Image 1: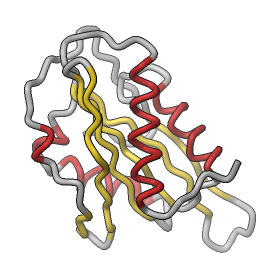
Image 2: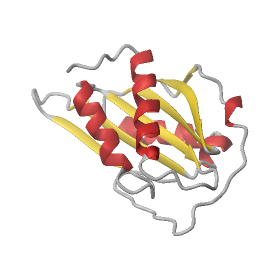
Image 3: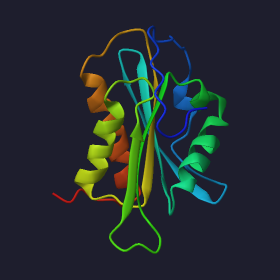
Length: 161
């Protein structure tokens, strides 16, 4: 189980053959977090799915990760990339933000940048990637951000350009 500020780079990505489409695009309410699951994006056998929840404290980051990783399909994902932004209680104008790429180099910071660009606050997004055996190059970042953007828009966050 991976938590804040950990980096684990796998030299050889694991090839997993999962029927990710069975992970429904629905909302699950577990441990007081309402987790929204986005659509699955598939490209060259790799699959990407975003999950997001409204959070009110940094403590809920670990709760959301633990909840997702209890599901065998998410735990077996090659990468669970995440980013969050949350206002700090009692400290007006102060916020906490962080990201984790889980071995998918630079993906976490790009995901955090998406949250910043969208002006999303008090939210955490996790994008699960199941490696399909074919290197995607920079396309993987597009899929990660598109999956995240889709679930954020589903939750009512609108891009503030």
